[in-house]
Amino acid sequence: METIIYKICGGERDREMLELSGKILRDGGLVAIPTETVYGLGASALSVSAAEKIYAAKGRPSDNPLIVHVAEPCDAELFAYTTPLYYRLAERFMPGPLTVIMPKRDVIPEAVTGGLDTVAIRCPFHSVARDIIRCAGVPVAAPSANRSGSPSPTSAAHVIADMLGRIDMIVDGGDSEIGVESTVISIADGIITILRPGAVTEEMLSEVCDRVVIDKAVTDPESVGAKPASPGMKYKHYAPAAEVILVEADSVDDFVRYVNSNASDGDGVFASMAEMNDFNVRVLITGEVGSAAELNHSLFSLLREADDLKLRRVYIRKPPAWGEHLALFNRLIRAAAGKIEKA
Ligand code: TXA
Ligand code: MG
Image 1 (cartoon, rainbow, N blue to C red):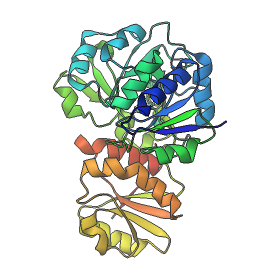
Image 2: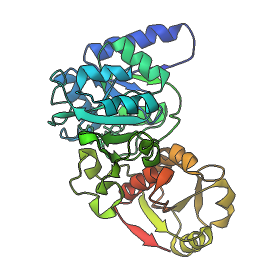
Image 3: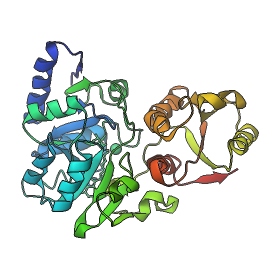
Image 4: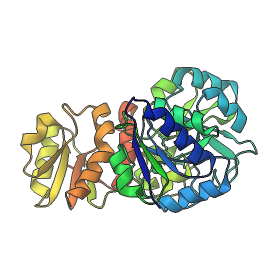
């Protein structure tokens, strides 16, 4: 299949190409769309055959439910049985990197929800994503636009590497600003349960609801591979070909010592610009000072870079398992297949 690639340029042509992407979606085709978290692989959420095309293009098991993307938070009403708590969350965090699981209405086929009677709804912040959904005139089911098992794509180049020739169109809207996927929550019984951590943190959700819990699978390295509430969490995920070694260290000095005495030729380390000269192996730079936001933004692209460089192992310092670091910790224990080394 020939894949149309279009880069948003702010010019006249954008409108015409966004209309085209909408038509492809409406007609049951596949379009990769930019969002603020990661690129999504979009298809009509009303069509069984379109959902099947997503699973085929990704090489993903079809029991893994898809997120349904809408252009306006209130459109959730058409596809899910909402509650007042949903609207409180929508007012505070939508459009944005939050996905809410609710009982589904019949219009959404079970092929989209992996056979579940619930549906995950998200209204992305990215204006191009919302324009494409509006042009499509249908809700858009979209998992991350990577081949199953490889790191999520945060640029059009990543999508091209994984999906060229497998889908109808790729819309290039620049690099994803956040870089890790949305926070996924369920809101059953008025309790917010975080199933996948993201940029909307436990602390932020607590401002809207005083009962917020984190599903055990989010932080527990033992759970990697087990059956969690969010089916997507059971697969070894976000993994590059290089072996990821997650190192728990009390200080930067301990981490540097551990890496320098254990790593060998062909290995690499993730470090900030400020630390780059301390290591005697190849350094992949995570940002100027190595803040959580910087590392979130660059994580998936650095994991891909590690593979482009054919690194055998990459050493990464374990982030704390709370607050703004939790999303990163959750992705890293999966990339490291649940193993943590102590420095
Ligand atoms: O930021 C994001 O959420 C991106 C962009 C494209 O929007 N999408 C994304 O989709 O990460 P995906 O398919 O890679 O991850 C969806 C996650 C999976 O862990 C899946 O199991 C969970 O959401 N999920 C979806 N529907 C669910 C449901 N009804 N019940 C429980 N978990 C669900
Ligand atoms: Mg994914």
